[in-house]
Image (tube, rainbow, N blue to C red; front, side):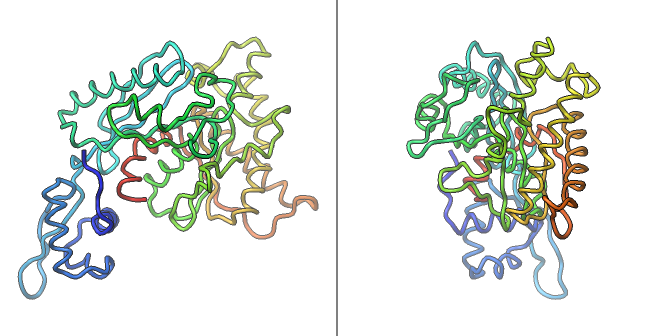
Amino acid sequence: MKSNLSDNEKVLLRLIALHQPVSRIELTKPSGLTAASVTRIVKGLINDGFISETGRVYGSRGQPSILLTLNPMGAYSFGVQFSQNQVTLMMTNLVGEEVGFETLPIPEASVTSICDTVNELTNKLIEAAGCDGDDILGYGIAVPGNFSTKPRRLLQHELFPLLVNCDIDTEFAERLNYPCWIENDATSAAIGVKQAHPSWQDFCLLHVGYGLGGGIFIDGNLYTGKHGNAGQFGALFPYDKDRPTGQDLFRHLQENEIDVKDFSELESFGADNLAIHVWIERAAKQLGEAILNVARIFDTTRIILGGLLPAEITTILAHKAEKHAQKLRTTEANYFPGPLPTICVVGSEMGKIGTAWLPIHRNIFA
């Protein structure tokens, strides 16, 4: 497997990703390396398949410079997402392009059931892509909830009781075919946003999943806190009250005799469904309050609303939440000076992208 890159190799790969196509001489100044070092390291990265030579640029004098780009087929990674009843596996290449995607049902959301299904899907996707197993960097795994200190254990989660208190890093690593990196679902989605929008340096993602989580980027760097639990925006709303979360939506629908237990089942309902409409109106007001609080705490450039809800519901929810935040900020009790951060909306695909991108992010771009 391609891993254990040196710090200088990572520096050059980041610069090539940011400025491609780029010549060797253009990499010397921003990397702080000598021309000879750049030439030597680039040769190794070409031999390992991470980068490719792609054309020439002609100057006024001397030999033409050969341009470098990332080689999409230089490495691959997988993203694992799971619900109570299914596992999805996305395969991506070195430039973040989707290579393959598969879904299978699982009998239960346990480590063994999830890993057995992931290994089965892995073999299927590798065969379909026609790539070598040595080109696989590993798995990113998105889990709902937060972690205890080392060894990391998933904290109490009523929808995933078989995962609670297991040594999550060790137990997944022992059962999977390749190395794995585990983050909560909100952080994984924030990594997906950053991969899709590399110029966004500062943002906070409000992630409406089973709970209300958050993903944070500051000065272009992911911030997860001491124990990987930064962004617990759901703590703004007491657990014994109505909350702007997927779990709360499922409860609300069941109280209205609509039997929905997971996000995949919401696709058959529109935002004009009366029970969903009522929930959106209430949740939007709560998210408007959250937007103001996050803006005060982080003073960020963008606040992004995303998560696991269907795109139509997320879009309407974000629009109403922004309107409520704008209204609330002018009141005496909630006065907010200056403009609010830009409010953006992203779809559930950001979680898939970010989870699949996680091994590449950790090996190269972190």
